[in-house]
Length: 294
Image (tube, rainbow, N blue to C red):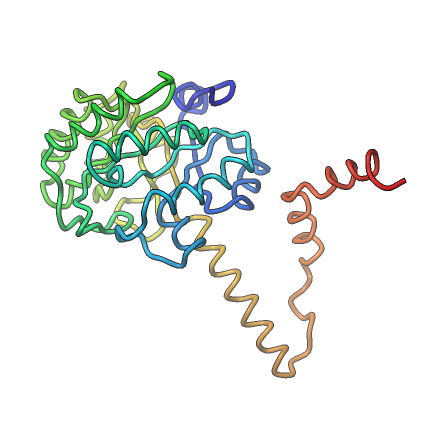
């Protein structure tokens, strides 16, 4: 259903599976062209690029679906998506599962943050749902799964409020409830990252690396050795994209004010080539040559 290989198969081969986070169709194409094997679709990045919004629980399923649709359509790589808390109760979880499976997403991440106090990234959660409520959602998601290769990851934001022991207890409950894998964001010390990885070794474990985040920066090889299956980089692409656009516009503003143009254009030919390759311009030109105007 999702291509030749699932996330679990790719993680076993890649050791670990490294997934940049795409925010639109262009970034998805560039990730594929760079040789990565899979893509993560992050709520923070999609909401920022598509709507100019922060990831604080104000987005709805429909808004994320539209962003995800463009990303999935742009690439053949399997995609796993941030599904927040399932956007409501168990009925909403079923609908979320149905829509994302129909779209062709290969997996999703469900979290236990309380929606009315949701915090982005690895910021300390202000509130959590009871673990039994999260367990009900995970069991419901598993029952709604049509393909056994569709990956359901339980994200617990309990580390900042309950410590690693509390997060591990939640993780174990979530696995018993139906999750295929676990993601504990915000772990602050390398020894705790290693402890969590060892305790859950053999389970599909996801971890994120964010520059300047609370989790110490470790290499994919180190994390795989600790027991992690997938390493995602949620801000690596989108932050650099925002900075590049801001710098380009600052340069254009100077040109508009009378500054000479072209001083920083030494890489413009490379940029144009990357852009044209990403939008598959030559493929469309070939179609026109063969079937279009004579």
